[in-house]
Amino acid sequence: MAVDGTYKENDRLLAIIGFGILIFCIAAFGAKLVFEPERLARYTWPVIWHGLFMLGWLALFPAQAWLMAAGRGRLHKHMGRLSVILAIAMIVTSLQVAIALTLEFQNAMLLAFNATVVISFVGFYAFAIFAASAGHTGLHRRLMLFTTLSIIGPAIGRVFDVLDMSEALSLPVILALKIIIPVIYDLGASGLRRLTMILIGLSVLDTLIGTWLAFTFAEPLFHALLLSN
Image (tube, rainbow, N blue to C red; front, top):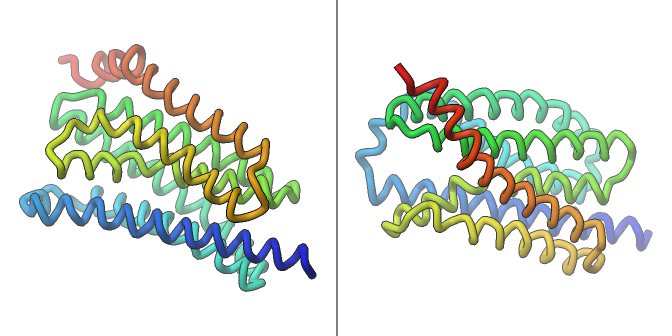
């Protein structure tokens, strides 16, 4: 019973963290619209669908944790299968919107950065599914947290944009949150684990390598393929 109680507490904490991420992302994009209402004209249907899919993921993550905390494991598994469809929709619309923005602003860096985010998301999500199927629940929880953290960059960038600061300055904040949030989860759950530290290292390394590749490889490649006439 004590072990089960610990599992429920861990899931409840994960849900609270997930709801915090959801609220932050909504507030970040909402602030952008408040200070720049003219951006509403840019919300075409592809952008709207992309936003809805992303919002759906950010809401599903804490909801899944609450289901486990409430002992609704069967429903959690059913929703987990549906999350695959949601993830595919997110990936497709993310690239679709990134390509459209790249062509509109003639800035291939937009697509380069979004491509690296998608790769990070797919990697963590795929391993999270594998961990769940193998029965490694602790690893699954943490991988799903890192999967969600992989897509918060645009929201953080909006905050810097609202403050009239370069979105490039958001990189240290993104890296910091990818370290701090998992540590908070571990300390509030069962204590800091070596597994979490390894995943933090992979997440930070993934972000840094993705940024480096975006500047040195992806951006020139996308520029040549999409922007040359």
